[in-house]
Image (cartoon, rainbow, N blue to C red):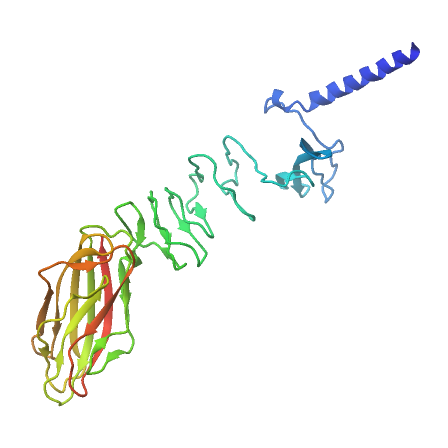
Length: 376
């Protein structure tokens, strides 16, 4: 009988102690003004290096791996750096050793970053998980004047990406979908080089296209043909993204020619683009040039309107080219055709300039400028 009474007394003491402990850590029943506190019992009495981190609060679940039940635990702790009122305080959430080996994540219905020095969410090492849900946003404080909302090493942005979008990898794909909203000042190109504070164009689907994909300029160096003519080595590429019915592609070239005293030098220019040789074709008759000319000018302007898209699509082309002698009016020929020409709009297309006439001995042709401009 005495033994039973003693047992009951011990059990009651344990229950009272457990109730007291649970009361001390009953976090959901307290207000912010009067929280329950779990702390080290011996506060510091003087400044120095003897600061104390909080106890580790551990939450554990259980899973079964035959033949044992295994704990899966998370640790929660206040970690201090320094022993003054200016100490750095970090609430750390870590994984305890062991436990489940699958994906670990922290889920909250809404995350707010507040405080005097708040304003940055850093997503650091390891592989990010696929997003869950239909939408997500990161909103910087209104006092922030410069914001890098997304910095992605290997991924293109989603449907709506405001402000600055950067991509530091040289192997990324072209940003070619989604609508940019707000004051977009920087867009990453597929080449890996960023563009800053440049105007953007938008294709029919709202895709942002950097200006350098619209105006594409070459500065040829030593690109010279002999009297037999041929195609200049310098090329330009017209980006197909955003081309639609009614888009206009402009091609502009300028160069020089030199002739000797040999009689009857000639020149004839054509433009090749969109997979069509002579989309702006050479004239039916050459232009005759003056003899003994050094670095006399020639130039060509070709315009292509997209009539239908596809591989091939169709287009109508027109323009003119000219050759001049110093102090004299230029001789000009018209580009143009009465029927549409093919133009492939499903892939990027090269632009080349060709001199088709067979000149005379000592004659040379040089290309100095070649650029394209696309109006979407």
